[in-house]
Length: 439
Image (cartoon, rainbow, N blue to C red; front, side):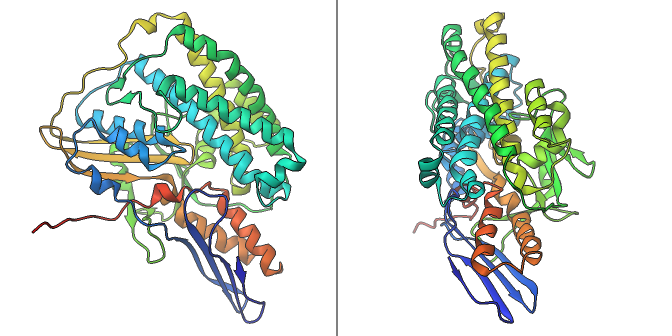
C-alpha cells in the first residue's frame, strides 16, 4: 500500500489487493477536494477460456469451465450444462434438478464461509488476516473451518470431489449418491446449520459504516424457491426477462485499466449482482429458518449497504444448509432415487443460454453449436465482471464522504469496500479473443 499526502492532490493506492481471489489493484485520485478518478485495476493475465472452448465437443464445456475457479466450479458447470441443454432442446427431469441444487448448496456453504470467516471478518474484527485473528478468536475460526468442511463434504459426495467436481455431465450426473450416503451426511449438515445460525449472529454484531448504494440490482428469481441453480432475470426497477434475453439487456465493454470486461445494463448503466441483489429481490423466497435468521439480524426486506453483505452471505449459508437438509430428507423418503442420473443430450445445431447464481452473483453462459455438437462460439459473463463498475462507483462515493480520514486509514477502508463484493479476479480475466494463424 502506498499513499500520497493531503495537499491539493491526494492518491489512495493499493498495488496488490489482499484477501481477494486473483491479482488486482486500486487507485483513487482526489483533487481539490473531489474524487476525480477511480480504478479497480485487474492486471491478472487473461486466460482465454472462450477461445479454448471453440472447436470442442458439446459435452466438454462443464469440465473445462469448472477449471476457471477452484472456489466456485459448480457455478460454471451448472451454467454450462443449462446452456448446452438449452441449445440441444433438452429438459432436465426434476430428480436431476434437485441433485444439482443439492450440489450447488455445498458450493454456497464452502464459498460463502471462506469469504465470511477468512477474507472479510478480519476487517470487522481489526486484524490484517485470519491467522492473526485466530490467535485471539480460535472459536470463530474453528467454526468457520467446520462449516467449510461440511460444504466440501457435500460437494465431494454429490460431485465426486470438492474442487473441480468430476461427477457432473451434460444431462445430469454419472451417478447419484445412495440414500445411505445421503443419510450419513445429514448429521454433519445439521451441525452446519447450527454453525450457520451462529455465523448470522456474529456477522450482525459487527459495526457497519453508514453507507448505502442506489445501484440497480439484478438476480435470478424462481416461482417458488430462493434462486440458486435456476431462474429467470428480474431487476430492482421492476423489469423481468428470460435468460435467453441476457444479451439484449446487458452490454460488455473493455476499459483500459482492466483485463476483464465491464458489464452494464444497456439503458441503465452499472448494476449489482450477488447476495444483496438476490436477497432484496427474493426476500419472500427465503426458507423459514433463513427468514427468521434474517429478521433477527435486522436485515429487513431490502439491504443496500454493501458492508452488510457479510450478514446477507451468512443468511445465505443458512439457506444452503436448510435447503440441503430438505432435499436429502425428500430424496430419502421418496421414490426419486430409482431415477436415472442423466438423460441423453444428442448434438444439434443451435444457440443455448444458461444462468445460475454463483455465490458472488449471477453467472451467464452462451454457446453456439454446429450440427455435430462442435462449439462454434462461447460467451461467459462472471459475477465480478458485472460488479466492477459498481465497485468503482462505491469507492467514489465512499471516499468523497470520508476525506477527513488520513490516507492510510481511508485506503484500508477502501480495500474493505472492495472485499464487500468478494471479487474473484481470476474468474473475470478470460475475455480476450485468441486467434492462432498457422503457416
